[in-house]
Image (cartoon, rainbow, N blue to C red; front, top):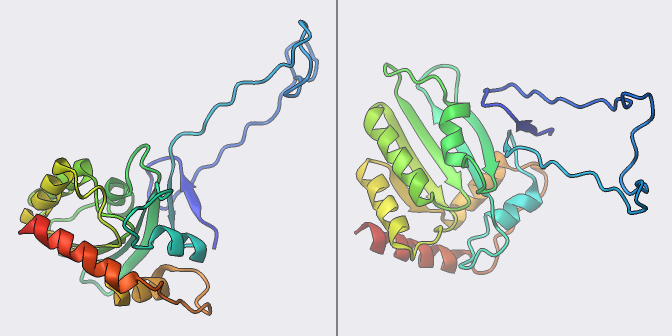
Length: 231
């Protein structure tokens, strides 16, 4: 599967522009990085970092799923949010399915879902949305989702999270409570949910998925923490 990197907030459209190498105005070929400059020092061209990108696709790489969705207590190195979604609009078109990922350095996957995957809200349509996310929303995303659910009465959202994001922080706990009060169903992913997500959203259906040894124990740990927060 070829995943698309969205540079613009446009559903289903990817525009990739490549700059052609042009000769300098004096007709000379531009110098390569590291080529000696006039002062004898290597000339290094400044690197321009690409804009933040939300990655969308149909199925996740198996390695990325096993790493990013592993429900460990300390999520070192897991600086992305993977969001797998199902949208039932009650029509004959069937379910809308896919995933998004981010890197916590720009627009988060939760916000991008509503702008890229569900940009045209119709109040006459009943939306039943299910997310399977690698970690629960941050405080800012929780607040935005709660406001959206209050404004869009026909949207019902269920979030199943592999891990709790910084659950000890008071603002995170307050955000999850606000989200719960707005009608969002919050639950940690059970072992069965990991198997379902693998079958539904991961590349290579022929590859067997084996749960890690402490998956059930970690689920119970996180579920107890979430229950304490939401009580």
